[in-house]
Image (cartoon, rainbow, N blue to C red; front, side, top):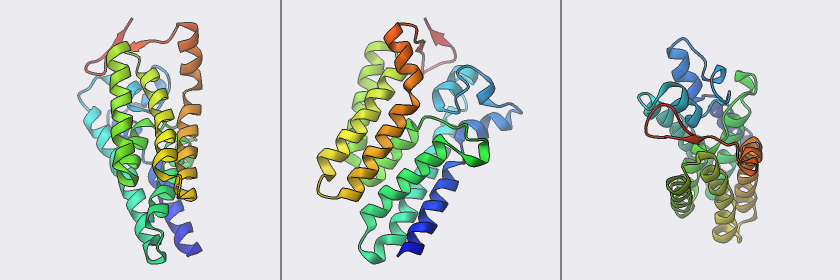
Amino acid sequence: MWLSILIGVLASYLLGNLNGAVCMSSLMHDDVRSHGSGNAGLTNFIRSYGVGRALYVILIDAGKAVVACLLTGLLLEPYGLYAEGTALGGLAVMLGHISPALLGFRGGKGILSGLFIALVVDWRIAVLILVVFFGVYLLTKYVSLGSVLAAITFGIGFIVFHHDNLTVMLCGIAMSAAATFMHRGNISRLCKGTERKTNLFGKGNRE
């Protein structure tokens, strides 16, 4: 069993290193991390290049999250630990996305990956995340505020729906904490009133 866990976690972490924003900007002979906030995430990609290629970023980051969760889940399924496997795979792929060794440990913030991890582990949590994110964004136009509250909702969802499975619940809390921590700069700017608003449906910022 431990070998299966090791293989699943390692493979999931390496999948996390496959960053959609970095891949797509590389195809344009550029690096998204040299623009805007310097973050290798969807929001900075849209701010820097517009929405035209954003779908490919989403497909890459969503795909790696789903594959990592399913792979680790299937590896642990023979031991009756499918749910635990999907959660462990999700945690590993998120850590690979946030802190990718193959990309100099400069990755994204984990929100998009987190959404699809939640979709595999428990679709109810994914629905909650979407409602919170888009509700907050449409009201405020702050992607960061929607992301932070979605990350917190992620953890709460795992506590509410998986309090009877310690491994799954703790993985969910860890992912929630990691994604929230990655937004510490945004939280500081939101508190100071200096955070930028973002138009997710076109290139450029909203002031």
